[in-house]
Length: 157
Image 1 (cartoon, rainbow, N blue to C red):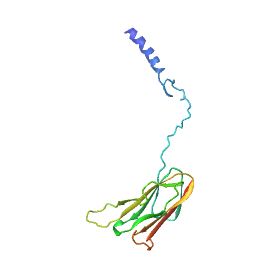
Image 2: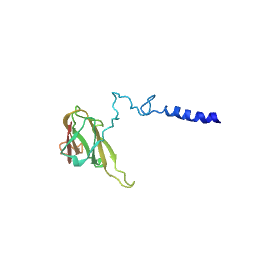
Image 3: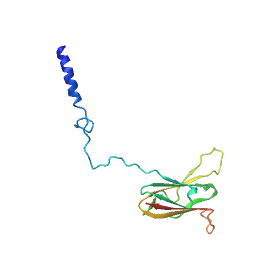
Image 4: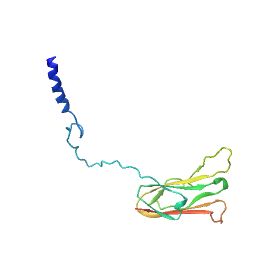
């Protein structure tokens, strides 16, 4: 029993010397070694979301920033948004199809002809200025002006 009482303080001291805080084999209280690697993990930029209220505006974004344009549409009437002028991909690249992606607004099953929205995904590539233009029209009605237009200028800085 006396022998065990003698070993307990020795074990406690030995175990206390084994703690680390700065990495494997680094004694407690020693700062971790400096590295050339960044300590912060880069996070993806939050998307810039644009709707009809952004029509005619200039939007400044950083390179790598995702951009989402969402415009109300109702293809059951024959109207849809068409890109009439693509942005310069050296500044802003279009990630979705030029016709965008249409999603109908959820409604009761008995409702016919409800609308939804067309969405385009883009991202800022590098410094520059460019714009995108869209027109809301019936594609088969050539010579008829669109009922709506949308344009936005992007400054990537």
